[in-house]
Image (cartoon, rainbow, N blue to C red; front, side, top):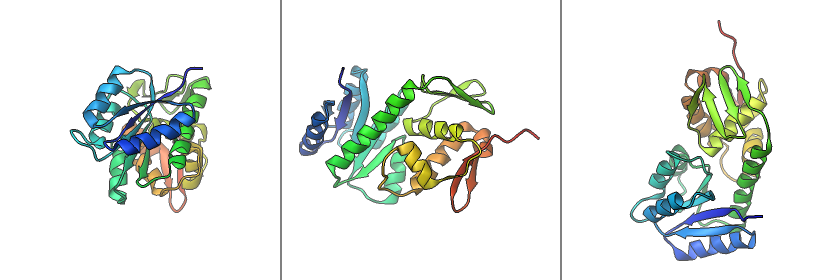
Amino acid sequence: MEKLKILVVDDESRIRKLVRDFLVKKEYEVVEASDGEEALDVFYRDKNIALVILDVMMPKMDGYQVCREIRETSSVPIIMLTAKAEESDELAGFDTGADEYIAKPFSPKILVARVEAILRRTASGEKKDGPIEMGGILVNKEAHQAFVDGVPIELSYKEFELLTYFMENPGIALSREKILNGVWNYDYFGDARTIDTHVKKLRAKLGEKGNKYIQTIWGLGYKFEVVPRD
């Protein structure tokens, strides 16, 4: 079986080595980049990268810029690493399209666990057959594409997973904790408000259907329900 390839981007060589060593032990293939520009060169040159681990503070081009550019052409999962621990910085990472956000210093074992969880969900999603269609929204899990009234929309990996989860559980009141367990697929160590950020972005990309179908349940979480036309 061919090893999954992960791109590790950090200007500190010791961090790259630490992450690489733990990933290699888990049978992943690792490619590296030391700044943002090199990261994009590697990413566009190598079409088989399954996941990107991306530092925020780097020379030439920071992680936010790299993430935005990758998101213009790819929904590859992106985990961002940063020394900044402010909530605003975390939200900025998600706003650029990142799927996970881990503050330094971090546990390499936790990082690897998150990598494995994301890649497991990617693999399991590819094995499921049949599109889901509700209220003019269509999700094709096999092709990892979403459409609104027949028009394709660009979603990050996590936004796509969140939409799929909602559409697989229509009419059900879902707590933030249940959504974290169902979409992130591991014991989440961050703030459940991460869900609110992703829902806000997903609603915006779905247009008026997003605000209409993704309903907020105050004090609990959300419910996806296709509301009949008046």
